[in-house]
Length: 122
Image (cartoon, rainbow, N blue to C red; front, side, top):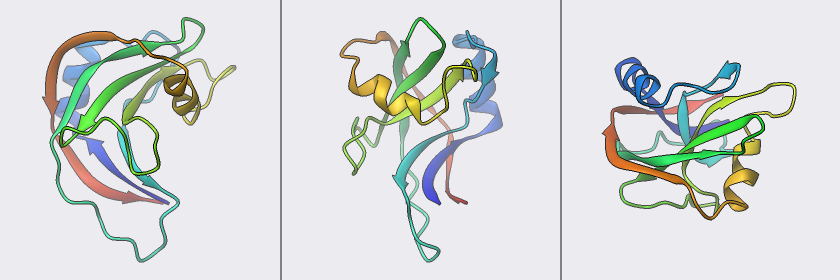
């Protein structure tokens, strides 16, 4: 289980238009706040989620770099992001964490606030 800020359908559609998915499997669902939470975890408070840019492995994985209430790093030390699209033959959504650890640059865009709903996901 994990807590997350889930994109609204409208925000997802707007981002999909701005960043057309490059790889076969489109994810574009949420940014994780905390992974491995217990059954009695609390839903995170509403937050301002802002898309800052995109990272592309150039071989099958792309993720949107985001900030949550102005922070770029989650409590576990990983970068806030939204796994955007991937080649399922090569990558799984969790691989975005490693890609972002090894990437110091991303293609920046004008920051865009997106609407999300805080949730606990099982």
